Length: 375
Image (tube, rainbow, N blue to C red; front, side, top):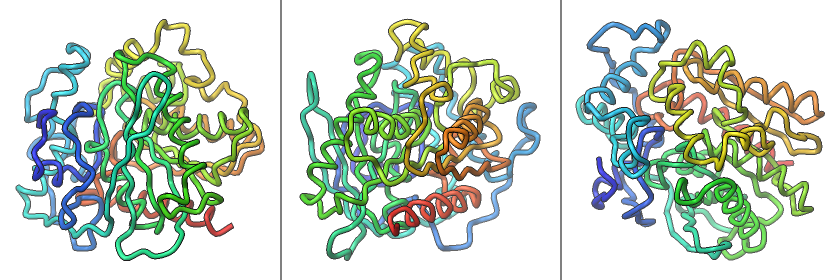
């Protein structure tokens, strides 16, 4: 799927994704109400891989392997060989999940949320926010500010539609998904500054979206997981209202590419070590910035943060740093809950229509957020 999406394709793109593509163009906030891939209550089809397990993933679940086989079948050039503009045109794990569903007659479950959009001013420009509100909800609801993944370089709100959608459905909160500006057009720390501007906007304007200004959490996947933790740190340091909770799904949390999971998963898919090196090269102004605590979270001051929930995956170069971050947070006195999911890869969280582990992780994340909102 290329960047210019038609309305049907956008509607179908309501699942995870991507370490592998799609720029932030051609988006719409009024996604089709009856098609979403965020979650399903029906019994999934039995998915059977066509080939043997990859050398790097002998414990992959059959469902995960089927998605990866479909992603490989598109024959896209590896992201590290492409320009950012070219990488944004690659197929995504979202595309793979959609095609797996189509080929196995897995139905789209009905959407349980309505979406609207708003642009807000930030330093040097503007960014777009997409609001997800549970259908038929009334009164004031908690709010989750969500940041998508893509290594700070690729992906957009459409590619990462599944997580905010399913979080809104399962928590009963308004989810605000943030289209921060991407590198290399906008280098570090632009994404971090845009993310904080969006968080501050929500704190100040929660009432305008029927949100409770005292019950605001932050969440994100991959690069967005890094941003979510940063929002709590920046709010603390700038004396802005703290979020009540942080959800970080396989976050970028360190700058050491020699960790055990980087060694084990150097060739894993859909995220491998060369891709992470490519993301870092395009987002940072120089490699020395990798030591900045906003990137290297495991070395940051983590004291006095709200409760943090961390989700990691077995086949992910970022697994070790996510688990180390959980230990560092605990040592800093922060309430931490973390869970690793075996047999799955980076980007699994939004694949709830085809992966049992994704549905389990969605429930786990939603439970942690609802607990924080109830305090």
